[in-house]
Image (cartoon, rainbow, N blue to C red; front, side):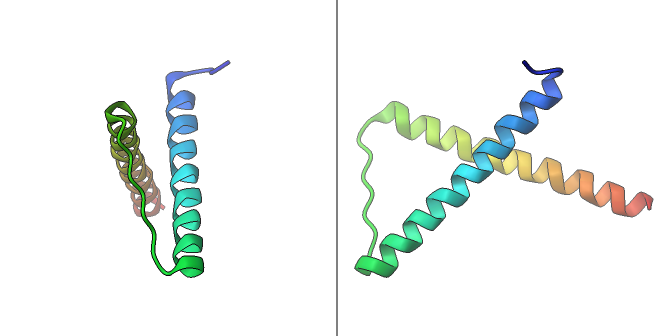
Length: 75
């Protein structure tokens, strides 16, 4: 399925970023429709997984930015 670990890293990273964008769109729609947004998650495993995905997304964005800067600096 994956040709390398790097491909898996990019697939997971991009899916995390796309899900974060979808969540932001949902939150902004809710705020514009109701004037507020309330989200309460009581399941600890889901909260920890969400925090892990956020951390992975931040690492992935930094990885992409570093690669972009190195590409522009070398050009």
